[in-house]
Image (cartoon, rainbow, N blue to C red; front, side):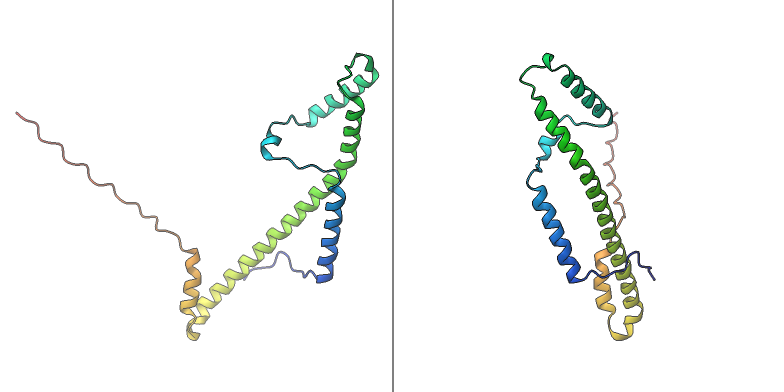
Length: 165
């Protein structure tokens, strides 16, 4: 018999509350978040650990030496990008952690479901014979049937003609 990895009930009131919170987050973040196509995302230069340090140092150096920066580079816009990133990053990190936990919980619900279903199937198959459930259990088990792994032997090559004297 399987053991449950998770075991809880989510009430209708909790679901309504959660959907309200997610809707509120979506509406609030929707005021400024941007979506991208995967093909566009692949073309972007991203800021990682090493490049973050470079980026921040270059921005500080540019601000300290603004006379050498062309007018086409909008330092104020870069500062707004930096401020927005600093505000959004902790929110993003919390949402990533929460999404990971939700994903893990959903996965464990599925693990419990398949384990329980297999236990039910085995019980029906074993104990249901007397009640005429053998055919139903057998039909249910066809979903797990695997194709035969027998390999066909290659056809023998035609015999080479005998050499002519």
